[in-house]
Image (cartoon, rainbow, N blue to C red; front, side, top):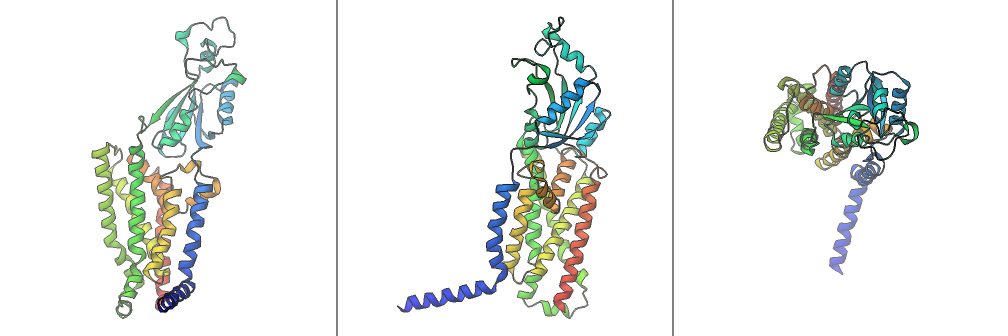
Length: 381
């Protein structure tokens, strides 16, 4: 009976400690809740309403009908109208749209000359003159988005254009930019940079202030002339170099082992990487000032990591998520970095083209550093 009493005493002690540790109890409830919501509601592999642009060079009733038919599939949503294909290509590079639907000026003639979709016209007999009605240019850096739009390549037009189902020529021509072979490594390796940096940078700094307190160094820091902001900056600088080293390893090995192209320049790559590292480190410092011990800092880090990985567009297309989830995902630094790193590495996007993500990242880093500094001052008081 004595061993049972001792076990019971330890059990009561652990339950009492767990009740007092509200952060741990909250994580026990919130982590499975967040996972359930992410996998059950936010994560959607059936992509719908991909934002695309249109270049209507025909401006005819047929071209407008084609645009309506394409939108009726709900796979894409036309959000932009461009005058030339060059403007559409630039918008894809800047990630304004994920694809562009280009309707040629001779679309009516193409329809009339095709024997498979002709409207019963006498001259619709020459199979060699048959051509696709229109052309898709697609950002192939996201393989799931590219596959969704490729599914429209041979879409039937029976109802409005009286197309027989045995049409031999594809309805639309599809050209994939940046990853024409749809190799998954081209999409994964740049995104992996964001995932690794998110895990390591937040994890390293989330315990920074807590570690000083647990080691008894906090009193020493209080008695030094070091200001709070100076302490915060000094804490993150070593990890900046570690983050840059990680990026060099991932992209370097990805290029040589998996033939992942690095189309962008080194300066844009360095700028966007530095901004993300600083933003992630500032978030880690905020967590460090909130946590009471290293266990709590680890729990809070996991709480941030899960949505950062699942909602950033690394594993599942951002465009396939519901709008409310997209709004939440836009708050996370990883979401913006996924777009920036893929834009620079794969699409050779300029810093000006990524200005929206860059400005947001700068604002997040500044606010994070200020919040960590103010929290640290509050602790000293």
